[in-house]
Length: 105
Image (cartoon, rainbow, N blue to C red; front, side):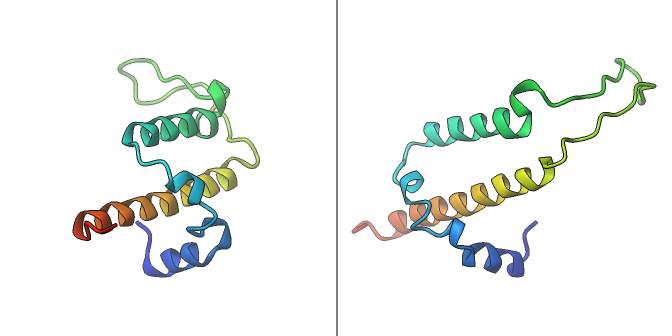
């Protein structure tokens, strides 16, 4: 869970400003948001199917196969993508709530 300090830092980062994310905020379709998240998971989370995994036989709790490591920049990129999505999701949620409670928008 993100604490207040992290949230303030995220909001202050120019890469995640409302203005920077404006083209994505113009998209109001929930299905488009789901497709966007799915694409990010495939491309960045699973590295387009190239993320190495270790197989554990069904019914077993361990494997004798070595566990592959993550690519060198994987965690940094994953954090960047996650923070981008957190900021974007926050702005989208704020826009939805503002529209629901202020019909003039």
